[in-house]
Image (tube, rainbow, N blue to C red):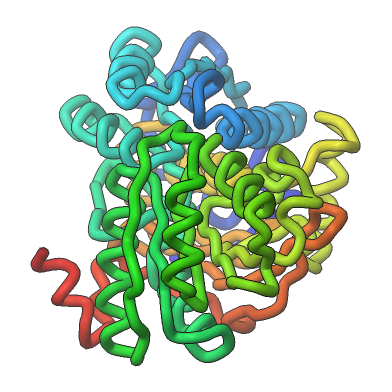
Length: 415
């Protein structure tokens, strides 16, 4: 059954005991007390919030934590879930993948949380995955990623490759040129993303000029920029993460390479990173996401206003912030429908749930626990905002994490 709500009305439609939704009325007869791990602590439901609050990834992840806490506050203000308040337990993954696994285990086994909202890099997700599977926990992961995964214990509220990477490469080939220079941080997301891009380039008439990787936190890009100058690509496809983006784009500008000289497309640089790097450095460069602060719909206007009112007018929203915020509401909607925080009941109830969010409608795919999304490409403006210049349209894209709908997808999955 599909349940369609808006996140802004969910807190009044689903968050209170005396205003049940159709879903809660339909499933009320099957509601049972939560089983362990239930997250129940007296009259509160404990949930985990696990992001890098220190280290190289904190530039991106602190704001994602803030978005999740804002959603929890909104739901609590409207009465909570199943008549109970949500109690967040915040932990720091510290930009260290073993620490993510350790903290996830602590949240599940010691704190008995009902769910964890967490992670950013695929390395952090891969480290946590066995912890959630072995302990029958539930993770909502808010980032776009490289695909080729569908854990029964994870809901993926960011984009699969067919909702971000693949549409952006097609757009670049049609509008910016055929020669690609691939630059990424040295871990699973950039390497797998580039495997996908290389097969797509072969299939769609593009050319790989070079492929480079640097460690997370790397800051000296002068020698790579010299190679880029020599190679003269049409496009730099950027999968750097964290503080490395600050160094790369500042040094690129210092080397006299601007967006009119070589097109850059980034898939891990959003408004929050632009704020950290500096709009004057980033203006003119391109990004591919599913949401921008400038996304024009009533739900987003309310969301942006609420976020700035809570955290400061200088703060910005971005795609991971939106996906993290949505994750809390999707989980709460599934709990409400299930009448329980029991993991298996929540998973079953989540199938097909659809809500209106700041990015537009998102729906949980019951087959793979990813969400339907709209693909968008934007150009960074001088004021730090991102102007949408292309989208996949009103029809949301079904997630295809294993690239089954592409003739060349098998070449990626077999490697």
